[in-house]
Length: 227
Image (cartoon, rainbow, N blue to C red; front, side):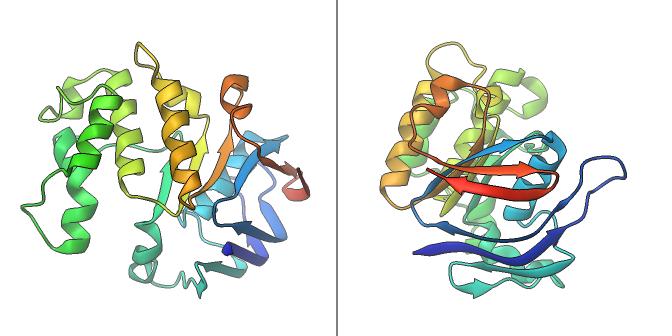
């Protein structure tokens, strides 16, 4: 089943001299599909991820998500899509003046209009697996990079996303222990349940764990998709 459908889709570079932009392209990503990005431009790849995450808006073309056309003229009309898109990239962040627990619950509190939301057992198990169960009530300003990165991973996985977008996942696995292995295990389980996965990595231990189709982005164009 098609999850993401891009048609005649164009993204302009965010800054002059920072890549070629993306498209025009027509592309379908399937629910449960796994896609690895290969590119000649980190800027274009990052822009592509932001586009899929609805954080960069197309200048032309259409984006259909889970059967519905997205409208970028009003960010509020994107919220239902955003809440089911997991996104980990260089510009991902936690809210600094909120505890880790509050960061994890922010989406649930917003969409359910529930300020007393609590971590459910599944999310707490993720916190334990990624080693952040002891720091839930601390703010990011009091934490080191490994804990912050782990909290970001848990937050995005806890969305129960229909699609997970990972830009260099190895850069989020800084904690001591088997964080990368835990991430791979978790993603494979979610993929079995129908989550699509799109990733860009230099880490062979990550990429060889998935039978991914290849999306090649060169000079701003998707030139080939193959097994």
